[in-house]
Image (cartoon, rainbow, N blue to C red; front, side, top):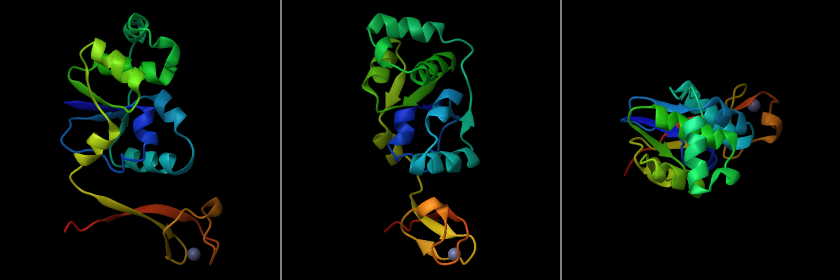
Length: 166
Ligand SMILES: [Zn+2]
């Protein structure tokens, strides 16, 4: 089974790491272009480097038809439509979305979905996120201004630490 993440799933901050147990986990290039700033963009880069794939549907026609039929099309972005279209083209896909309109259209075409919080719970490893300076190696709890270390001025990056389960 494949998993497709929509923009709301990425913005929820709950997709901290790639969900396990799926053949492939996808986003579309339009979704990628909607998540360009702040913490969600950093999380997205981490997901992309750990195996999240970008894949686009061949056609959005059927998804647009379905969204028109449910009356949701006006409230959906092209990125939302691309997610629905990709899920319709894949053999057995589940969509992770917190967007009620997207969920509504998916229901109408019998495609499974789950909210980002639920998908997040399925992630087998929990990770703790931290910021670390690449120069002096100091850790920070928060994002630093301009990604710059206040001590040495080097670049500060987001890292994940495995969290020990009790
Ligand atoms: Zn530093």
